[in-house]
Amino acid sequence: MDLDLIKKLVKIVDSSGVTELEIQEGELKVKIAKKFKTNIVSTVPVASPVITDVVPAAKAEPVQKEKAEEAVHSNKIEIKSPIVGTFYRSPAPDADPYVQVGDIVSKGTVLCIVEAMKLMNEIESDVDGRITKILIENGKPVEYNQPLFLIEPV
Image (cartoon, rainbow, N blue to C red; front, side, top):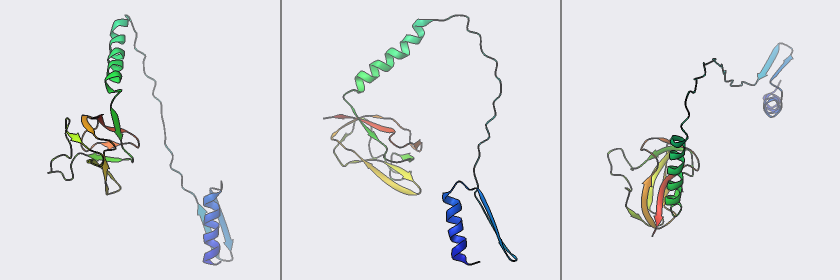
């Protein structure tokens, strides 16, 4: 059995629904198998709490705060992470942060670094404006398209 044939068989198994293939030619035996990661999920019954009193006013207050924040942020521009990685405010652990709340930035100003797979990716401002809020803590993981900064255009 030649190596090219084995490579072709591996590709066939990899691209198909076949999970295992075993071939024997004389004394030579080849077995190709896919490995699957499985997540084992178990459920544990939990006693439900008993609600004795409902206070609707307490529920309405956080919703009003969220609406007020949305109104305040409506004129602000979000700078979002273009990649999944780790958020860093400065170029080195002992260095000053690139920007602080209140700083005026121009288009192209480096705001932070998002590290992905040991590569340091500088995130730049898309607009001229003032940093009004930094939404992520230094050293925390960020997701793709997650807001990092709020900038008020000037």
